[in-house]
Each structure stands twice: as C-alpha cells, then as structure tokens.
Length: 367
Ligand code: F6P
View 1: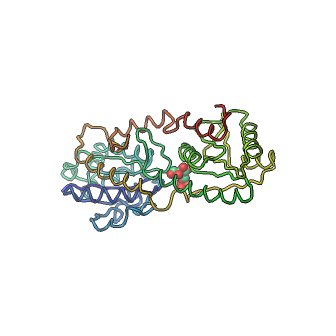
View 2: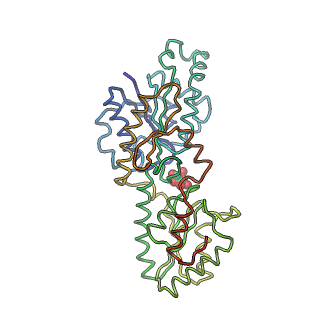
View 3: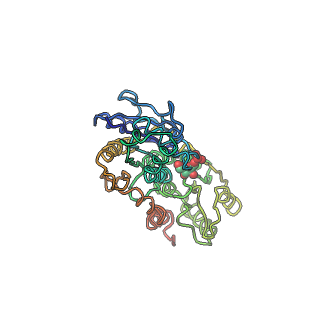
C-alpha cells in the first residue's frame, strides 16, 4: 500500500485542518495509508513520533477548527541540504514516497526543491552508509503536491488561498465593531491589518466596510497623499456629515519612495492636521486564528481530495502541481509556475478595484 504524508507549513490559516482531514480521508478511500507529519518540515527532519499514521477517526471534527492541529514551524534545518537528507531518510524508512504540503509560496518552493534533489539525496544516503541500495530502490521518485494555505491570498494562479475568506470575515467583523465607537464619539480609527507583501486583505476589507481611506503595499499613494487624505476626510466629515472615519493600513504599506506608512504615522497626521480624535487598532493575529468560514471549509475539502488524486495520477516527468481554484473550478497548475508568477506580478490586486474602492469614498478621487 502506498503511503502519503501530509504536512502544514508556514503561517497557520483557517482551513488547514479541513485540508489535512480531506487528504487523510481521501488517501484512505484510495486504499493507501495516510501519515501526518507534525510541526511542518521540522517533523520531517526529526522523524520519530513526529511522523505518525493517521486513521479516519483521527481527523473527526477538524473541519471547522482554526490553526493547524498538526502544527507548523519555520524550519531552519530543512533549508539546509543536511536537513533535507535527514528528511529523505525518515521518509524512506517509513515507506512514504509522496507528500501533500499545505502552506505559502515559500513552503511550497521548499517542497519542490526537495523533489528535485530527491534522487541525489538518496544516492548520498547510500554513499554515507545510512541506507542501502535495496532500501532506496522502491522509492526512486518523490511526488509532491501543494495546497495554498495563507490568509494573505498572495498566490498567483488561484482565485483564493485557503484561509483568506475566514480572515477577511474576521477583519470585517472587527471593523464593524469599531464603527460603533467611532460613530458614538465621532472619532477616527486607523485599523492595521495583516499583509506584509500583499494588500488583498486590506483592499477587500476596505471595500467590504466602506472605509474612508486605504494603504496597501502594491499601490503606493501619490506623493501628496497626506493633503489628499486630509481633504477627503474633512469633506466627508464636514460637508457629507460623516460621524466616523476609518482608515485601513496594510502592515506592509509604503509610499512611492518605499518608506513604510505605519498606522501610527497616519494617526498622527489625522490628529495633528485635522484635530480628529483618532485611535489605532492593530488587529494582529486575531485575523489568523478562529474557526474556518464556510468557504474555507469546502475549499480545503475539495482541494484536499484533488491533491490526493494528483499524487496518484502524477508521472515522474510531470512538474509538481499546486491545487488551485479558478472560476469556481478546482484545478491543478504547475507549482513553480504559480510561484514564479507570484514573484513577477502583484498577485491579486487590480488597480481598478483599488480605484473603485477609493472612488466610492470620494467622487473626485484621482488615481
Ligand atoms: O500568514 C501571513 C502573515 O499573516 C503576514 O501577513 C504577516 O506579516 C505574517 O503572517 C505574520 O507572521 P508571524 O506570525 O510569523 O509574525
């Protein structure tokens, strides 16, 4: 019976547990054995009881749970060839020749490197006397399939990453809550949301809550943004009678000179230039934890099932796939193509959506 391993890596995201559950159950359905690798690549490198067979009942109730129940880690050891050699040995000793990895682009790139190196890692293990030729013979090929788990929705080639809609929902709920205080006291609130490199959460939450202004990494504002922001907020408050002001700042927001635009800076501007009683709310990791929303439950489930199908249908020559969703269809895309496209372009931000968000706050908004 084939043995398929599953691990979660990088930042946790709601829906990762749904993905693991689906991979485990589909693996068993396909008459294979499922192995969970605990603590991400760290578990693969360390072996022992960090690699355990899992059965149908072991993943019961996982669909809605937040975080990742098999743990995640940013493994330094796996970045080194010596660590990957240990990982390869652990897999061969357990008879695991396929891995489904759920993580962000860094984690998935690591998986692809591992697959590329696999034959030479095994050869080196034999050379070092750690494994015998007979031991490695049945494991000539390593199959890798990626699932994108990330709240940031920062991978090209897929409409949504596992976790992004749960996170967006939580941000919207938090902004709605803050609205009440903002309205009651006629205050300004600067809300900092996650997104070190990708402003999808900031843009979509600004649209979904009707925020007054927004800063994201991909589209830096015009150089006169301070005047621009202040005049629009003043107009909204004085002429249009708005009692509350909400500005959303992605944590990676920057200006055209690549200087960081922080929530504290924005607060100071609103306070000092407009005399607006302004507070900062940093949503932090509340955006990442918590139950998976319905979308992330079905997405992770359907993608987990497809990942196992992909493992079983892969040929040694085919590039490692990542499971995507496009126009509501679960699909496979070459993993490294998606990673490369993510590096080359702004993954998910369309300038016209940004302009639409701003225009609805101010009819005279100019890009
Ligand atoms: O999961 C991605 C992300 O949410 C980024 O937007 C953010 O910068 C980062 O994780 C924070 O990660 P950590 O938990 O390691 O501080």
